[in-house]
Figure 1 (tube, rainbow, N blue to C red):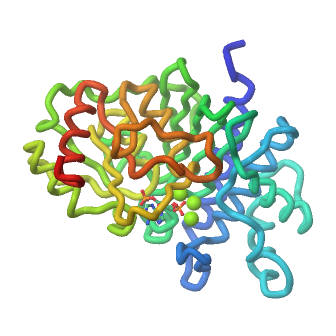
Figure 2 (tube, rainbow, N blue to C red):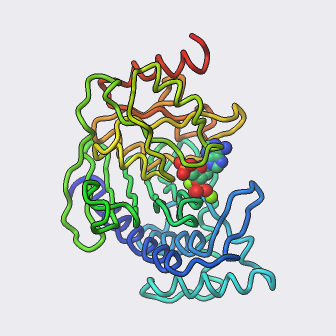
Length: 332
Ligand SMILES: Nc1ncnc2c1ncn2[C@@H]1O[C@H](COP(=O)(O)O)[C@@H](OP(=O)(O)O)[C@H]1O
Ligand SMILES: [Mg+2]
Ligand SMILES: [Mg+2]
Ligand SMILES: [Mg+2]
């Protein structure tokens, strides 16, 4: 058996089931089903349901593994949380083989509270990355990765709204991306287990590049990216897309550069916003660093404490992109 074959299969199963939870909610999203968390970001029944499902599937196969998950069960507890809890429970049970009860549901969600760190096995989970996009009806991703001793070794990403073939945007949607360190990056769709290896587009000059960036301007500075594009003589307008679908879009050659440019030097990126996506890009020919050209350090807890922003590009042009980034941001 190849390295992490069992983990790969379990992670695919977990992400496919959680993606079904998201798709069910996506079809029925109505106003009032979104809660605003203390950091002002939105969360829905699908975020909680997907986290419960992934954590349950992982626990059944790897009961000793830790999980660093974005959500916790606070908003589902007590009388105030009853209505949402019932909704999340029924969503989770609709895709699980063994039904959970209230207590097991809350426990499953809260198994994602691990603080992270440099030693041991831990899964990083973003049950819905791009909740803004999910609510808007755009792109979002279910992102799961395995970190061993501080390094991402396996990444699985479900992108339910992403066209299987970008050249046929109105065709079948629902892509699953899978990667294990050293084994390449692969795409399959939701309805067949057949995998195709993906690669970044071969590009030798940044001026030919297609950029992608967040839709939400508070997540990444659109103004700075326009200046960087101009410095690199890029003429094509950027693709704006929510979630780690940006990493998969670059990994399969539909865009060439992903810039995440800090809007505040105080913001620390969550590790689950980058774990699966960064390995996917590295395994398809790209380099992922921060704005200082430092590799992302996943060993420092739940946040990327020592990194600022994210710069993703093909290995042939990454250093040129970094030069332009630093010129615009620091005048160097
Ligand atoms: N000020 C900020 N700067 C950068 N990222 C931020 C941010 N505030 C929130 N985010 C993160 O941006 C993620 C979405 O990224 P994108 O803009 O690429 O779609 C969110 O993930 P969730 O949607 O999982 O909460 C959230 O963790
Ligand atoms: Mg969130
Ligand atoms: Mg996220
Ligand atoms: Mg999320």
